Image 1 (cartoon, rainbow, N blue to C red):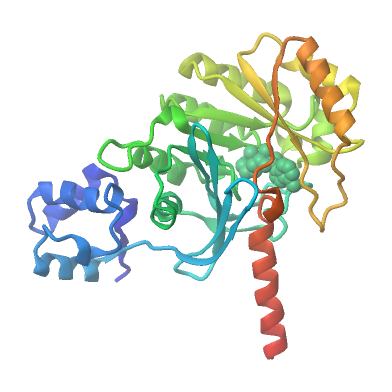
Image 2: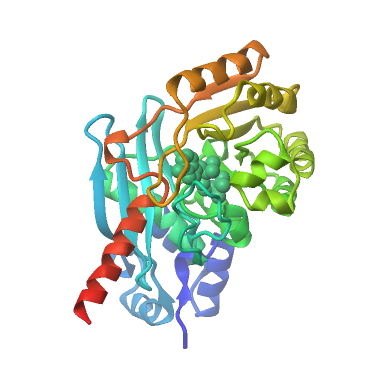
Length: 353
Ligand code: SAH
């Protein structure tokens, strides 16, 4: 019989499951705290649970754990990139960023991605599989264990399209922000999407107070389609309508991510068009100088074009920031650390045969 994934169970479910095994429901609460508050390493750490029940749990449940296979730390700003191995041998990337206002962790939501954005390294090998709630949670937990520091912000901006893994994502958010667990404030959680319209609408209905970021990258459909295949499926008009609804329901300020690619989306005309597109919205535009990926031909915009683009937005009274680059000396941009690891593995396999 396949073991059930105990760390993906929400508190109410866990209590029920435990009761079904003949224990008092409050054992479920104790176990939940061991896993999600005290971040224990296994059933044997649960000292207020009887030895015989712990034994039963070991047989019944899978206890999610991530193996740390690589770690790169920036000497410039203390940013740390982690490469974690999952139980099935797949590897994922997570990043710890240290800011003045606290520690932020960027997690992956899928192994690979099927969205195909042309400048992104995470999508090169396609989608392998979705991550479970426990695998998303463990990225945060393992970083707290390894760094010995508390994490206050979580951004779902690593590999994968979170709204393409909707049920696991929402379960993850509920558990991450549960007061019986690590209890991270929903206001400190951000989900970034390439713009899956049904997913945005559904997420609005969850009544979370999390932040939503849209990967915009162009001010009109034609330009956006050059960068993002998903832009063929959903028009900006539909996406903006869904975002307006998200804002109406949650009251959370929207973020638009805009990765600047030389000669593709960084002209003054495009800056003006962008200003018109978001005019009147409570939003922030986050300009990101594109990280060059060796498999992709796109080049980063010149410093001057970036500054000019920003100035035009500011003149139009749009909130705009240029994303501070964290860990530029360990520059394994979005998915590149994972990719170089899996490429290396493949080479080793070829040379062995
Ligand atoms: N799939 C989600 C979240 C993961 S990508 C999304 O699309 O939002 C996180 C952000 O990094 C997105 O804005 C994505 O477009 C951007 N990104 C990906 N590769 C990049 C690169 N090489 N340079 C700059 N930004 C990149």
